[in-house]
View (cartoon, rainbow, N blue to C red):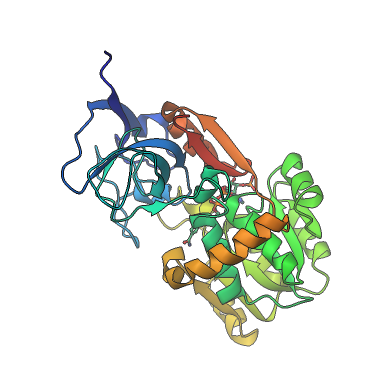
Length: 340
Ligand code: NDP
């Protein structure tokens, strides 16, 4: 009988600038046997998310970096293959931060059961998982959308941005979605029902955004930073709210970039326009998980919201897919199908 090995993608070296394939290494190790209280899992879907770029870096952050040689961190949906933990039985579908590997061992402490009858199990990594919760809690708590307001969101075909825009629509906002490329623009307009869909790669993007927001911007859900932020900033209205969720345009930067000091101008606008900026990490709102599941689950069931997945096949494809995610090559929630 063939010995089953645990395939793992480990961090081979820390990237300087954009990650490359050389920063990752595929290793195969013998399967460990679960000890008392532990579970042997088989990864079915691995989630690839922008925050992983931060874990590859040793720079100070809100979470510890992955050590060199350590298994890349990540959420996954798995099947229980063997259980020595009374809370789980063989065949259970679970999700947790079990990393980029095919056969993790877990003590069960951070695992949640996934109900395959509720929705496709991969959605536990997207619209019904961490990115969905990020969109829901960041928009409702910090953005505080009101009918008639203008909400702008970028990375708006991804799992966070697409849900932010759709919840904004349900709350009565006029939604301006921003993404890269004609296909994504068509999706935002025709499938997600955003009021305006813009391509941030258009040479006249800033002028298009100004034209799309004749009454200014009341909520800017910040997912990207960079040139999108620069176009948004002058359009913010008095009392605008800016949930600062992600800054993907800057994740590959190693330090401060040369350029004019915009801090005094920014702070002047914060003061005179009475702007609210609030950074958040999804776990800040962990107490709202039940509300999130109830509301988003119901919207999904009724067809009020849609989601899109970008599925790549095979754990060995994860590094290339992740590198593409940072460049906008994904179209929808990026997941790796690791096993059937
Ligand atoms: P997505 O699947 O939307 O992928 C990221 C997208 O960002 C890319 O597809 C690309 O789309 C866009 N992008 C990349 N570079 C740029 C750029 N320079 N300018 C404009 N757009 C760019 O990701 P998620 O939905 O998973 O995450 C969205 C954001 O939310 C990220 O910044 C992430 O770090 C953050 N996040 C924060 C959390 C928190 O707790 N605070 C939790 C989860 C996510 P396009 O083709 O449109 O350019």
